[in-house]
Image (cartoon, rainbow, N blue to C red; front, side, top):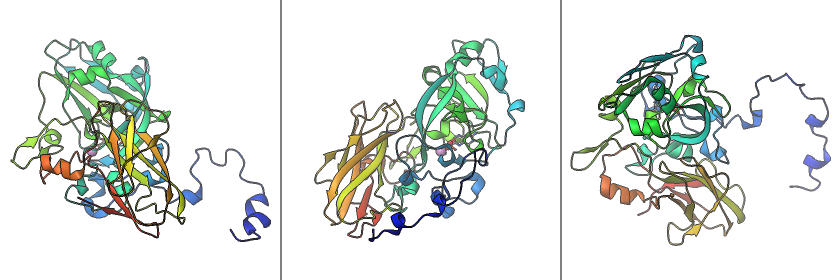
Length: 390
Ligand code: MTE
Ligand code: CO
């Protein structure tokens, strides 16, 4: 700062007049100085915004919770504008008594609050063939981490009474895509929620208002939004989203299927291409996020030199099962170029692989389920770029 510093010596406008009173902003929005902190899409990725995706601005966030207005969106047929009074949830198929719930009915079941990440299986998919998109928002932003309030799906299924041959469920959305997926009954009975609140308030229309399925740790496509029906069956349905989509075509022509659990993954959010280092050499804060569909993240390693030396990062914030975790690594930057990477370890002992290690097993055809290690090159000016090293 210059001396004397006008930020200190001059009376700033916000000290010279009274501000807005209460109620001027009955539903608050961020400061106008934060107007750049928004979801963004990549226009050439999809032909039409009604069947498209935008990305969470991970490089602008801290802690572990994604604010509701910044949760990435993925719609196959646009945002359904559902009237909760006219919305019904049906359970049918292999049950003792088919049931229909109104939203009011759902509110009469015991509810739970749990924090989970939702990651689209296509997150980082564009990076499979090599470094492509310049920003962690675009390479890793098909994820959000939210506290859900909802009724355990198990309670609703027990109310209907699943027959002994009821082995699968098929949740269906009320949007124009009528999205469906097959989910094994064990998962449905274990930790799935029929959720109506996110971060304490009603779900946003973009996220499935008034009710969505929460399938902890499993790929985002299964988290049916605008949930209208759950059919119980004795085998999977083999619908579009579990055959031609969300499967991984291997080199031998055979596709991996039913790869529901999201493997452990991490990314450095700062510095990153959209968030360069803005100061010169000296004390520098590196931070990022890590998650696993199989548990917690007890440890993240960070390298500044492309993997020659690894350092254990500092975890900070709550460590919930199948939730995002926050890590930091404070270091003294010498002003020289950096090759930054992070590597997550999850509570099962699994270690995040390199992209080359993934390609060795999965071949070159994959799009989905890319949890490989991300590299950012940082130059002397602090600018970061998406690169790959082998
Ligand atoms: N549910 C319905 N009914 N329609 C959809 O298009 N998209 C799925 C899933 N559930 C979708 C849906 C996909 S592919 C993902 S990744 C997540 O919702 C995205 O959830 P979000 O929009 O809250 O980020
Ligand atoms: Co998806």
